[in-house]
Length: 293
Ligand SMILES: [Zn+2]
Ligand SMILES: [Zn+2]
View 1 (tube, rainbow, N blue to C red):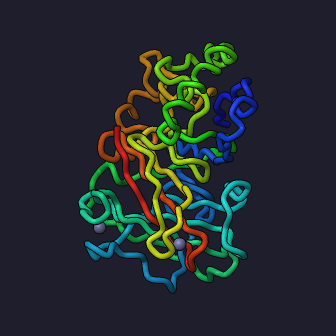
View 2 (view 1 turned 180 degrees about the vertical axis):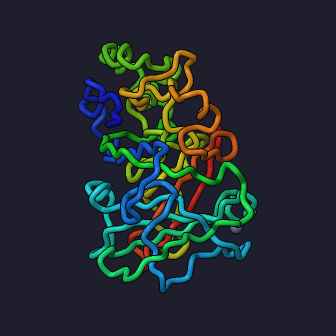
């Protein structure tokens, strides 16, 4: 089981307007997952034999599997369309999509796993041209439900300063517990989790991006993050406790895995990929963003 630290300080008591949200951290770790219907990163998924494998609209080549998530694993936080219990995310594993901010073009598929019929045994995207960092390794997920506040990027300057004062005054126990980064106590202890997750707030790396739906113009909600790093000393409370952090301050992985991270995903300069969704419009359209350090 992979778990993160839960702060003792009740920040919302001091800042009732700060929006606390639930999120599910995915904690992907390399492993072969035999069950094609299981939640996983990459690997073989439940894809109907009758259905064409999705193609990149720009390259006309196969997309590849990034995530498959079952409602029983993330449904306490992420709302599914009625009757559906499976969410799949596929993308074109290349950055060179100019109209998509030089990031992979993705598609989401919401499904009812009871009505899939016969399943494909071979996944698509086997010999497709790719960028190395856009291809996740097969991983099992170790989901953890957490509560998080918006990224500091989404706070105004005055609130940021006030929050830091409260944490310094009342949160010394938490600061010590996670060896919080004194440059930003808030993000180290309360701001949005930076690793791969479902639901919650987007942990913006550069600026807050209020993504609006192209169809209805309303603000979209954060659905998924695919991160380049899953565990790091700099994560503060979001570092995995049980795994610990390596003595060199890296991510606690064996040397063999160092540099590749847990998942093999490396988007731009340790970037994160955000999938936003609009649940007001039919088919729940998505928009994606990539931000790097
Ligand atoms: Zn493409
Ligand atoms: Zn919309």
